[in-house]
Length: 465
Image (cartoon, rainbow, N blue to C red; front, side, top):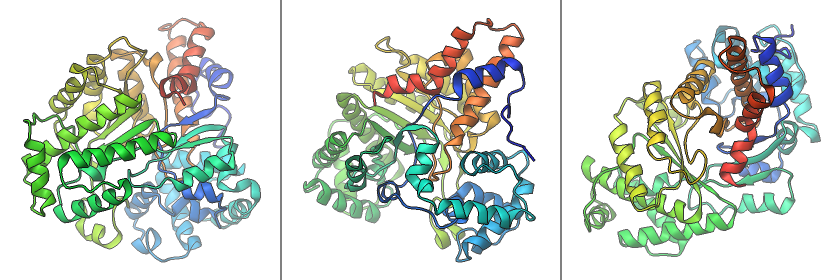
Protein backbone atom coordinates (compact mmCIF):
# COMPACT_ATOMS: atom_id res chain seq x y z
CA UNK A 1 0.00 0.00 0.00
CA UNK A 2 1.47 3.35 -1.11
CA UNK A 3 0.33 5.39 1.90
CA UNK A 4 3.16 7.96 1.66
CA UNK A 5 2.47 9.08 -1.90
CA UNK A 6 4.27 11.85 -3.79
CA UNK A 7 1.38 14.17 -2.91
CA UNK A 8 1.01 13.13 0.72
CA UNK A 9 -0.81 15.89 2.67
CA UNK A 10 -1.03 18.14 -0.42
CA UNK A 11 -4.71 18.80 -1.08
CA UNK A 12 -4.62 21.04 -4.15
CA UNK A 13 -2.77 21.39 -7.44
CA UNK A 14 -1.29 24.63 -6.18
CA UNK A 15 0.00 23.01 -3.00
CA UNK A 16 1.58 20.23 -5.06
CA UNK A 17 3.32 22.73 -7.31
CA UNK A 18 4.63 24.75 -4.37
CA UNK A 19 6.01 21.67 -2.69
CA UNK A 20 7.48 19.82 -5.66
CA UNK A 21 8.83 22.86 -7.52
CA UNK A 22 10.02 24.98 -4.59
CA UNK A 23 10.30 23.13 -1.26
CA UNK A 24 11.22 19.54 -1.98
CA UNK A 25 14.83 19.97 -3.10
CA UNK A 26 15.87 22.60 -0.57
CA UNK A 27 18.70 21.49 1.77
CA UNK A 28 18.10 21.06 5.50
CA UNK A 29 19.52 23.31 8.21
CA UNK A 30 18.70 21.48 11.45
CA UNK A 31 19.60 24.20 13.93
CA UNK A 32 18.30 22.43 17.04
CA UNK A 33 18.69 18.72 17.72
CA UNK A 34 19.83 16.34 20.43
CA UNK A 35 21.82 14.02 18.18
CA UNK A 36 24.83 12.41 19.91
CA UNK A 37 28.00 13.83 18.39
CA UNK A 38 30.05 10.78 19.40
CA UNK A 39 27.97 8.54 17.14
CA UNK A 40 28.54 10.90 14.21
CA UNK A 41 32.27 11.04 14.96
CA UNK A 42 32.45 7.24 15.15
CA UNK A 43 30.19 6.92 12.09
CA UNK A 44 28.46 3.94 13.67
CA UNK A 45 26.07 1.53 12.05
CA UNK A 46 23.07 0.54 14.12
CA UNK A 47 22.56 -3.18 14.57
CA UNK A 48 18.85 -3.06 13.77
CA UNK A 49 15.82 -0.81 13.31
CA UNK A 50 14.63 -1.45 16.85
CA UNK A 51 17.84 0.05 18.19
CA UNK A 52 17.64 3.25 16.15
CA UNK A 53 13.86 3.71 16.55
CA UNK A 54 13.30 2.71 20.17
CA UNK A 55 16.66 3.29 21.82
CA UNK A 56 15.70 6.69 23.25
CA UNK A 57 12.38 7.82 21.77
CA UNK A 58 10.09 8.90 24.59
CA UNK A 59 7.37 9.78 22.06
CA UNK A 60 7.11 6.10 21.14
CA UNK A 61 7.40 4.95 24.73
CA UNK A 62 4.45 7.12 25.78
CA UNK A 63 2.33 5.66 22.99
CA UNK A 64 3.34 2.10 23.87
CA UNK A 65 2.52 2.57 27.56
CA UNK A 66 -0.84 4.05 26.60
CA UNK A 67 -1.46 0.93 24.53
CA UNK A 68 -0.86 -1.26 27.56
CA UNK A 69 2.75 -2.25 26.82
CA UNK A 70 4.86 -3.15 29.84
CA UNK A 71 7.87 -0.99 30.72
CA UNK A 72 10.24 -3.86 29.99
CA UNK A 73 9.49 -3.33 26.28
CA UNK A 74 10.07 0.44 26.50
CA UNK A 75 13.10 1.17 28.65
CA UNK A 76 13.60 -2.34 30.02
CA UNK A 77 15.90 -5.22 29.12
CA UNK A 78 13.79 -6.90 26.45
CA UNK A 79 15.57 -7.58 23.15
CA UNK A 80 15.49 -5.06 20.32
CA UNK A 81 13.22 -7.33 18.33
CA UNK A 82 10.80 -7.78 21.23
CA UNK A 83 10.59 -3.99 21.65
CA UNK A 84 10.08 -3.48 17.94
CA UNK A 85 7.36 -6.13 17.91
CA UNK A 86 5.50 -4.24 20.65
CA UNK A 87 5.90 -1.02 18.69
CA UNK A 88 4.44 -2.72 15.63
CA UNK A 89 1.49 -3.89 17.75
CA UNK A 90 0.97 -0.30 18.89
CA UNK A 91 1.24 1.27 15.44
CA UNK A 92 -2.35 0.57 14.23
CA UNK A 93 -3.63 2.32 17.35
CA UNK A 94 -1.60 5.47 16.49
CA UNK A 95 -3.97 6.59 13.74
CA UNK A 96 -4.24 10.42 13.84
CA UNK A 97 -1.17 10.61 16.07
CA UNK A 98 1.87 12.17 14.33
CA UNK A 99 3.82 9.01 15.12
CA UNK A 100 1.81 7.21 12.47
CA UNK A 101 2.88 9.71 9.83
CA UNK A 102 6.49 9.96 11.01
CA UNK A 103 6.95 6.20 11.18
CA UNK A 104 5.76 5.53 7.66
CA UNK A 105 7.53 8.61 6.26
CA UNK A 106 10.80 7.35 7.72
CA UNK A 107 10.22 3.85 6.37
CA UNK A 108 9.64 5.33 2.91
CA UNK A 109 12.46 7.86 2.80
CA UNK A 110 15.26 5.81 4.34
CA UNK A 111 14.33 2.26 3.35
CA UNK A 112 12.00 2.63 0.36
CA UNK A 113 9.21 0.68 2.08
CA UNK A 114 5.52 1.25 1.32
CA UNK A 115 4.13 -1.39 3.72
CA UNK A 116 2.05 -0.38 6.71
CA UNK A 117 3.72 -1.31 9.98
CA UNK A 118 1.49 -3.75 11.87
CA UNK A 119 1.92 -7.12 13.57
CA UNK A 120 1.67 -9.08 10.31
CA UNK A 121 4.39 -7.04 8.60
CA UNK A 122 6.64 -6.46 11.62
CA UNK A 123 9.17 -9.26 11.08
CA UNK A 124 9.61 -8.57 7.38
CA UNK A 125 10.08 -4.83 7.97
CA UNK A 126 12.43 -5.47 10.89
CA UNK A 127 14.62 -7.81 8.87
CA UNK A 128 14.63 -5.60 5.76
CA UNK A 129 15.51 -2.38 7.60
CA UNK A 130 18.02 -4.08 9.89
CA UNK A 131 19.87 -5.63 6.95
CA UNK A 132 20.16 -2.23 5.25
CA UNK A 133 21.34 -0.53 8.44
CA UNK A 134 24.41 -2.77 8.43
CA UNK A 135 25.52 -1.49 5.02
CA UNK A 136 28.23 1.21 4.81
CA UNK A 137 25.86 3.66 3.12
CA UNK A 138 23.50 3.34 6.10
CA UNK A 139 26.00 4.52 8.68
CA UNK A 140 24.86 7.58 10.62
CA UNK A 141 26.74 9.83 8.20
CA UNK A 142 25.09 8.04 5.32
CA UNK A 143 21.66 8.55 6.87
CA UNK A 144 22.40 12.26 7.27
CA UNK A 145 23.68 12.71 3.72
CA UNK A 146 20.71 10.79 2.31
CA UNK A 147 18.42 13.58 3.60
CA UNK A 148 20.36 16.49 2.02
CA UNK A 149 21.36 17.94 5.40
CA UNK A 150 23.83 20.84 5.39
CA UNK A 151 23.98 21.82 9.08
CA UNK A 152 23.27 20.00 12.34
CA UNK A 153 23.43 21.74 15.72
CA UNK A 154 23.70 19.43 18.71
CA UNK A 155 22.90 20.39 22.32
CA UNK A 156 25.86 20.48 24.70
CA UNK A 157 26.68 21.31 28.30
CA UNK A 158 29.30 24.03 28.94
CA UNK A 159 31.64 21.48 30.54
CA UNK A 160 31.65 19.29 27.41
CA UNK A 161 35.12 18.89 25.90
CA UNK A 162 33.64 18.99 22.35
CA UNK A 163 36.19 16.34 21.41
CA UNK A 164 33.66 14.61 19.16
CA UNK A 165 32.89 17.83 17.31
CA UNK A 166 36.61 18.28 16.71
CA UNK A 167 36.87 14.75 15.33
CA UNK A 168 33.91 15.38 13.04
CA UNK A 169 35.49 18.57 11.74
CA UNK A 170 38.82 16.84 11.17
CA UNK A 171 37.05 14.08 9.22
CA UNK A 172 35.98 16.62 6.59
CA UNK A 173 32.28 15.77 6.49
CA UNK A 174 30.07 17.50 3.94
CA UNK A 175 27.62 18.40 6.70
CA UNK A 176 28.57 20.92 9.38
CA UNK A 177 28.01 19.54 12.89
CA UNK A 178 28.15 22.40 15.39
CA UNK A 179 27.69 22.53 19.17
CA UNK A 180 25.03 24.52 21.01
CA UNK A 181 25.74 26.07 24.42
CA UNK A 182 23.14 24.87 26.97
CA UNK A 183 24.01 26.21 30.44
CA UNK A 184 20.89 24.96 32.26
CA UNK A 185 22.87 23.16 34.96
CA UNK A 186 24.87 26.31 35.68
CA UNK A 187 21.67 27.95 36.95
CA UNK A 188 19.88 24.89 38.40
CA UNK A 189 20.40 25.92 42.03
CA UNK A 190 17.18 24.35 43.35
CA UNK A 191 19.14 21.46 44.88
CA UNK A 192 22.30 22.68 46.63
CA UNK A 193 24.15 19.37 46.62
CA UNK A 194 23.60 18.66 42.92
CA UNK A 195 24.35 22.26 42.02
CA UNK A 196 27.63 22.38 43.91
CA UNK A 197 28.76 19.11 42.37
CA UNK A 198 28.15 20.61 38.95
CA UNK A 199 30.00 23.82 39.86
CA UNK A 200 33.00 21.71 40.88
CA UNK A 201 32.97 20.12 37.42
CA UNK A 202 32.63 23.55 35.80
CA UNK A 203 35.60 24.77 37.87
CA UNK A 204 37.70 21.93 36.53
CA UNK A 205 36.61 22.48 32.91
CA UNK A 206 37.28 26.24 33.05
CA UNK A 207 40.33 26.10 35.32
CA UNK A 208 38.69 28.72 37.54
CA UNK A 209 38.01 28.23 41.25
CA UNK A 210 34.32 29.11 41.60
CA UNK A 211 34.06 30.75 45.00
CA UNK A 212 31.92 33.77 44.13
CA UNK A 213 29.21 34.84 41.76
CA UNK A 214 31.73 36.78 39.67
CA UNK A 215 34.02 33.75 39.41
CA UNK A 216 31.02 31.71 38.27
CA UNK A 217 30.49 34.23 35.48
CA UNK A 218 34.19 34.08 34.61
CA UNK A 219 34.04 30.30 34.37
CA UNK A 220 30.97 30.41 32.15
CA UNK A 221 32.63 33.03 29.95
CA UNK A 222 35.70 30.83 29.51
CA UNK A 223 33.50 27.98 28.33
CA UNK A 224 31.40 30.33 26.16
CA UNK A 225 34.60 31.47 24.42
CA UNK A 226 35.73 27.86 24.02
CA UNK A 227 32.45 26.92 22.38
CA UNK A 228 32.72 29.90 20.02
CA UNK A 229 36.20 28.81 18.98
CA UNK A 230 34.71 25.42 18.11
CA UNK A 231 32.00 26.77 15.83
CA UNK A 232 29.13 27.33 18.26
CA UNK A 233 26.82 30.18 17.30
CA UNK A 234 23.69 29.32 19.31
CA UNK A 235 22.75 28.99 22.97
CA UNK A 236 19.72 27.12 24.25
CA UNK A 237 17.88 27.32 27.54
CA UNK A 238 15.32 24.80 28.78
CA UNK A 239 13.16 26.80 31.19
CA UNK A 240 10.01 26.02 33.12
CA UNK A 241 9.09 29.69 32.66
CA UNK A 242 10.82 33.00 31.92
CA UNK A 243 12.98 34.73 34.51
CA UNK A 244 12.97 38.52 34.70
CA UNK A 245 13.14 39.38 38.41
CA UNK A 246 14.61 42.64 39.66
CA UNK A 247 17.93 41.81 41.34
CA UNK A 248 19.62 44.47 43.48
CA UNK A 249 23.37 45.12 43.39
CA UNK A 250 25.13 42.48 45.48
CA UNK A 251 22.03 40.34 45.83
CA UNK A 252 23.14 37.68 43.36
CA UNK A 253 26.42 37.34 45.28
CA UNK A 254 24.60 36.86 48.59
CA UNK A 255 22.32 34.22 47.12
CA UNK A 256 25.21 32.46 45.43
CA UNK A 257 27.23 32.32 48.66
CA UNK A 258 24.26 30.75 50.42
CA UNK A 259 23.87 27.92 47.93
CA UNK A 260 27.64 27.48 47.45
CA UNK A 261 27.82 27.00 51.19
CA UNK A 262 25.40 24.10 50.92
CA UNK A 263 22.20 25.79 52.10
CA UNK A 264 18.99 25.41 50.13
CA UNK A 265 17.51 28.47 48.43
CA UNK A 266 13.89 29.47 48.77
CA UNK A 267 11.76 30.00 45.66
CA UNK A 268 12.38 33.74 45.51
CA UNK A 269 16.14 33.40 45.89
CA UNK A 270 16.30 30.70 43.23
CA UNK A 271 14.29 32.83 40.81
CA UNK A 272 16.51 35.86 41.39
CA UNK A 273 19.71 33.88 40.81
CA UNK A 274 18.29 32.45 37.58
CA UNK A 275 17.14 35.91 36.47
CA UNK A 276 20.59 37.37 37.05
CA UNK A 277 22.33 34.53 35.22
CA UNK A 278 19.96 34.64 32.26
CA UNK A 279 20.85 38.30 31.73
CA UNK A 280 24.54 37.44 31.76
CA UNK A 281 24.00 34.61 29.28
CA UNK A 282 22.15 37.00 26.98
CA UNK A 283 24.94 39.58 27.18
CA UNK A 284 27.55 36.96 26.31
CA UNK A 285 25.50 35.80 23.34
CA UNK A 286 25.05 39.35 22.10
CA UNK A 287 28.77 40.09 22.40
CA UNK A 288 29.57 37.07 20.24
CA UNK A 289 26.75 37.60 17.75
CA UNK A 290 25.04 34.34 18.78
CA UNK A 291 21.36 33.41 18.67
CA UNK A 292 19.71 32.58 21.99
CA UNK A 293 16.87 30.05 22.13
CA UNK A 294 14.42 29.92 25.02
CA UNK A 295 12.36 26.73 25.34
CA UNK A 296 9.68 27.43 27.95
CA UNK A 297 6.79 25.61 29.53
CA UNK A 298 7.63 21.98 30.30
CA UNK A 299 6.53 20.34 33.55
CA UNK A 300 9.07 17.58 33.88
CA UNK A 301 9.32 14.23 35.69
CA UNK A 302 5.71 14.16 36.84
CA UNK A 303 5.68 10.46 37.72
CA UNK A 304 7.98 10.08 40.73
CA UNK A 305 7.77 6.29 40.86
CA UNK A 306 8.78 5.80 37.24
CA UNK A 307 11.27 8.68 37.29
CA UNK A 308 13.06 6.90 40.13
CA UNK A 309 12.94 3.67 38.16
CA UNK A 310 13.99 4.79 34.66
CA UNK A 311 15.25 8.39 34.97
CA UNK A 312 14.65 11.68 33.17
CA UNK A 313 13.68 12.21 29.50
CA UNK A 314 11.80 8.94 29.33
CA UNK A 315 8.29 10.20 28.62
CA UNK A 316 6.88 11.53 31.88
CA UNK A 317 6.85 15.24 31.04
CA UNK A 318 3.88 17.42 30.09
CA UNK A 319 2.83 20.99 29.40
CA UNK A 320 2.96 23.47 32.27
CA UNK A 321 0.73 26.52 32.74
CA UNK A 322 2.96 28.96 34.60
CA UNK A 323 2.53 32.65 33.72
CA UNK A 324 5.28 33.74 31.37
CA UNK A 325 4.45 37.11 29.74
CA UNK A 326 5.58 39.66 32.35
CA UNK A 327 8.82 37.90 33.26
CA UNK A 328 9.66 37.29 29.59
CA UNK A 329 8.98 40.92 28.72
CA UNK A 330 11.11 42.06 31.65
CA UNK A 331 14.01 39.81 30.64
CA UNK A 332 14.00 40.91 27.01
CA UNK A 333 13.49 44.55 27.95
CA UNK A 334 16.46 44.60 30.33
CA UNK A 335 18.74 43.35 27.57
CA UNK A 336 17.23 45.74 25.03
CA UNK A 337 17.63 48.76 27.30
CA UNK A 338 21.40 48.34 27.25
CA UNK A 339 21.38 47.40 23.56
CA UNK A 340 22.53 43.87 24.46
CA UNK A 341 19.55 41.84 23.24
CA UNK A 342 20.85 39.11 20.91
CA UNK A 343 18.93 37.48 18.13
CA UNK A 344 16.33 35.39 19.95
CA UNK A 345 14.00 32.46 19.25
CA UNK A 346 11.13 31.82 21.66
CA UNK A 347 9.40 28.44 21.97
CA UNK A 348 6.30 27.69 24.01
CA UNK A 349 5.03 24.24 24.92
CA UNK A 350 1.51 25.28 25.93
CA UNK A 351 -0.61 26.39 22.91
CA UNK A 352 -2.34 28.81 25.28
CA UNK A 353 0.74 30.99 24.79
CA UNK A 354 0.77 31.06 20.98
CA UNK A 355 -0.52 34.59 20.48
CA UNK A 356 1.50 35.73 23.49
CA UNK A 357 4.74 34.64 21.81
CA UNK A 358 3.76 35.96 18.40
CA UNK A 359 3.07 39.40 19.85
CA UNK A 360 6.01 39.38 22.28
CA UNK A 361 8.57 39.12 19.49
CA UNK A 362 7.06 42.21 17.85
CA UNK A 363 7.87 44.28 20.94
CA UNK A 364 11.60 43.87 20.39
CA UNK A 365 12.09 43.94 16.63
CA UNK A 366 14.48 46.87 16.25
CA UNK A 367 15.03 47.14 12.50
CA UNK A 368 18.65 46.02 12.78
CA UNK A 369 17.98 42.90 10.69
CA UNK A 370 14.93 41.07 9.32
CA UNK A 371 13.24 38.87 11.89
CA UNK A 372 15.71 39.45 14.70
CA UNK A 373 13.12 38.14 17.15
CA UNK A 374 11.65 34.78 16.16
CA UNK A 375 8.82 32.61 17.42
CA UNK A 376 10.00 29.04 16.93
CA UNK A 377 8.16 26.24 15.19
CA UNK A 378 5.80 23.93 17.06
CA UNK A 379 7.83 22.32 19.83
CA UNK A 380 7.53 18.87 21.42
CA UNK A 381 3.81 18.23 22.00
CA UNK A 382 3.03 20.90 19.38
CA UNK A 383 5.30 19.27 16.80
CA UNK A 384 2.39 17.86 14.78
CA UNK A 385 0.02 18.92 12.00
CA UNK A 386 -2.41 21.08 13.95
CA UNK A 387 0.37 22.52 16.15
CA UNK A 388 2.37 23.57 13.08
CA UNK A 389 -0.71 24.97 11.37
CA UNK A 390 -1.60 27.00 14.48
CA UNK A 391 1.94 28.37 14.71
CA UNK A 392 2.01 29.27 10.99
CA UNK A 393 -1.43 30.87 11.07
CA UNK A 394 -0.83 32.84 14.27
CA UNK A 395 2.57 34.09 13.12
CA UNK A 396 1.02 35.06 9.77
CA UNK A 397 -1.63 37.17 11.48
CA UNK A 398 0.57 38.81 14.11
CA UNK A 399 4.02 38.92 12.50
CA UNK A 400 5.80 38.21 9.22
CA UNK A 401 5.67 34.54 8.25
CA UNK A 402 7.98 35.28 5.33
CA UNK A 403 10.84 36.00 7.77
CA UNK A 404 10.38 32.77 9.76
CA UNK A 405 13.50 30.57 10.10
CA UNK A 406 11.52 27.36 9.74
CA UNK A 407 11.69 23.82 11.01
CA UNK A 408 14.03 21.78 13.20
CA UNK A 409 13.96 18.18 14.44
CA UNK A 410 14.59 18.59 18.21
CA UNK A 411 15.32 14.87 18.03
CA UNK A 412 17.76 12.25 19.26
CA UNK A 413 17.09 10.02 16.24
CA UNK A 414 19.09 9.90 13.02
CA UNK A 415 15.87 8.95 11.21
CA UNK A 416 14.03 12.15 12.15
CA UNK A 417 15.04 14.42 9.27
CA UNK A 418 11.80 13.77 7.31
CA UNK A 419 10.13 16.04 9.90
CA UNK A 420 11.45 18.87 7.74
CA UNK A 421 9.57 17.40 4.78
CA UNK A 422 6.48 17.01 6.96
CA UNK A 423 6.62 20.69 7.90
CA UNK A 424 7.21 21.79 4.30
CA UNK A 425 4.22 19.81 3.08
CA UNK A 426 2.01 21.39 5.75
CA UNK A 427 3.32 24.87 4.86
CA UNK A 428 2.75 24.37 1.12
CA UNK A 429 -0.71 22.95 1.70
CA UNK A 430 -1.76 26.02 3.69
CA UNK A 431 -0.33 28.47 1.17
CA UNK A 432 -1.79 26.52 -1.75
CA UNK A 433 -5.20 26.63 -0.13
CA UNK A 434 -4.91 30.41 0.29
CA UNK A 435 -4.02 30.86 -3.38
CA UNK A 436 -6.90 28.71 -4.58
CA UNK A 437 -9.27 30.59 -2.27
CA UNK A 438 -8.15 33.87 -3.81
CA UNK A 439 -6.59 35.05 -0.54
CA UNK A 440 -3.09 35.26 -2.00
CA UNK A 441 -1.93 36.02 -5.56
CA UNK A 442 -1.16 33.07 -7.83
CA UNK A 443 2.37 34.40 -8.22
CA UNK A 444 4.65 31.39 -7.94
CA UNK A 445 7.85 33.41 -7.94
CA UNK A 446 6.51 35.38 -4.97
CA UNK A 447 4.94 32.57 -2.95
CA UNK A 448 7.43 29.92 -4.07
CA UNK A 449 10.26 32.21 -3.02
CA UNK A 450 8.62 32.55 0.38
CA UNK A 451 8.46 28.75 0.67
CA UNK A 452 12.17 28.44 -0.14
CA UNK A 453 13.07 31.17 2.33
CA UNK A 454 11.18 29.50 5.18
CA UNK A 455 12.51 26.07 4.23
CA UNK A 456 16.17 27.07 4.04
CA UNK A 457 17.29 30.58 3.04
CA UNK A 458 16.11 32.43 6.14
CA UNK A 459 17.94 30.05 8.49
CA UNK A 460 21.19 30.32 6.53
CA UNK A 461 21.05 34.12 6.65
CA UNK A 462 19.86 34.32 10.27
CA UNK A 463 22.40 31.97 11.86
CA UNK A 464 25.30 32.80 9.55
CA UNK A 465 26.64 29.25 9.45
